[in-house]
Amino acid sequence: MMTLDCQWTFRMLLEAMSCPGQRMTLPDSAEESPFRPACTTILHTLLDADTPVALAYPDAAAEHWLRTRCYAPVVPPKDAVFAVATDWSWEEHVFPIGTEEEPENSATLIIEIPTLQGGPDLILRGPGIQSTRAIAPEIGAGFLPFSQHNHSLYPRGVDLILCSGRDFLCLPRTTEIEEA
Image (tube, rainbow, N blue to C red):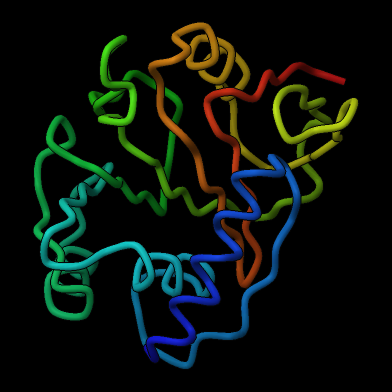
């Protein structure tokens, strides 16, 4: 991936984190990868040899790609700066949530989901959202309790990047999420 492409993607990620729930679209990734295009591009942008990443579930092909294409060390979940999942359930996972003194030492979860539309209607509130924002990702059972618990941990907690095809949206831990 070209340096300018990574810089452009990084700017999009910053904008998406600043405007929770805003859907962003990345160019198609021509690279073969075990991940979909948005996830592939985001991983190339965020990972390097000094950035530990975990797989939420063991996947030999994904681990090989992360090590050889992003040069990222694949670590246990408790040591991750980023975690990636292509098949996700909202059960208890052991990813860093930071501390009261150092909340920045938490993980960002990059999760592939089937679609960013067509799931349950959710209402977002919080920093970066003028009043409310509606989203409807096909996110799976258990997401709402997970997100409410995650928000209650603030300033600790994990940040989420949800990817589907070429699209993604961000849900930082500061975002309050409820059913519509």
